[in-house]
Length: 116
Image 1 (tube, rainbow, N blue to C red):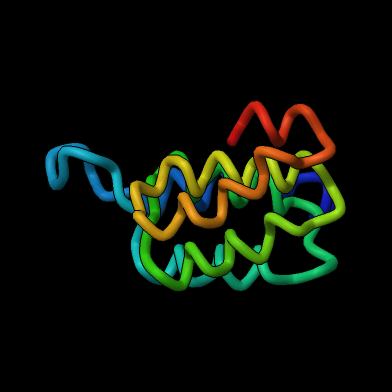
Image 2: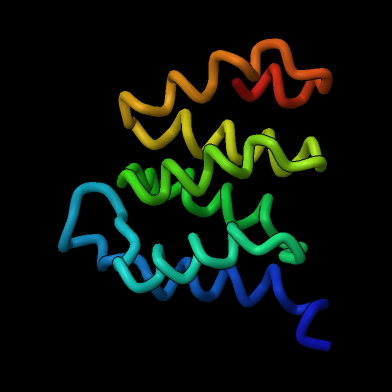
């Protein structure tokens, strides 16, 4: 039951972790939430890696540890996960991200190349 509701749970975590609109021009995740999402992203058996990466991308999380976690995810066997990680890195605004994205321009999956 918990696995089926995981995307909804991730959405709730994402929404609850954002600062209120009046506090910041750009929504930002709370550090504890980013840390939790990074640790889930690093688990080999995590079925929601793509959703985690997309949430980090939408929040434009660009700290060094998150960029490193997303970079590792770029080698995932699932092209959806690789594309989501590429999206997140592109949205991060981090200068480090471009170095990780360039090799993906030659990825065997078109969706990954498009997202790069």
